[in-house]
Length: 243
Image (tube, rainbow, N blue to C red; front, side, top):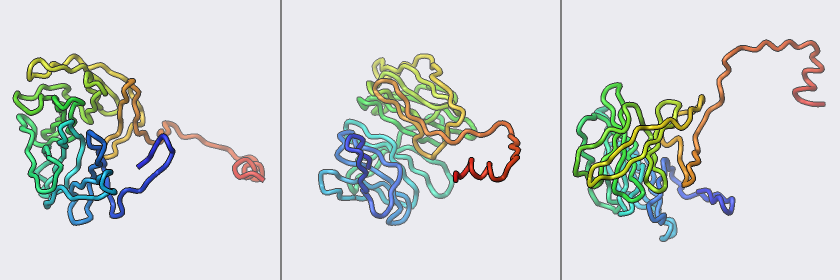
């Protein structure tokens, strides 16, 4: 964990961990680990001397992605038989079972994201080569509403009024509001395009309350080859290494 105020780094786990997610009240961190077998979900408590508790067990891979104000967390479960990932909602206490988000179109779902007030839920669904971004009320009472034909990695603005998402190297956003139990989605707007935005298997961007965006980028690729002619080996060595 990095403390950006004190510029300090603290190691929280000793047996490995990945894809961390804060609880809504920030008293716990949820993460995935294979310390006891397959990749399952664990909770680390900051109020109980960093005690780690295993929340799920099973012969499949699981990752947390978002937490709601009610204490629920969204997880993505990937069966090892290749049948496709799906989203479940977990009550983060040992022994509690999960409930699945009903899917009307997709074979595979991931990147589940609660809105800040917990009343809406965005996720990406995929069938064969087609990926679509959806939003629905939570708890689910109506069919999901399509946000974008091609979209993934949904992230809500801090006030829950806009939904940001990726499409390749571009970031889009759209205004979303609830009309009863049905989300109303406005036309998406292109925010920016980054030539070297990379996929990392988890979140590759985040948006703060002022609309600033953090993204993960890789080194820019050279589009042309450059021939460098060395006229003096001694001058070249001095220029590169000094002395």
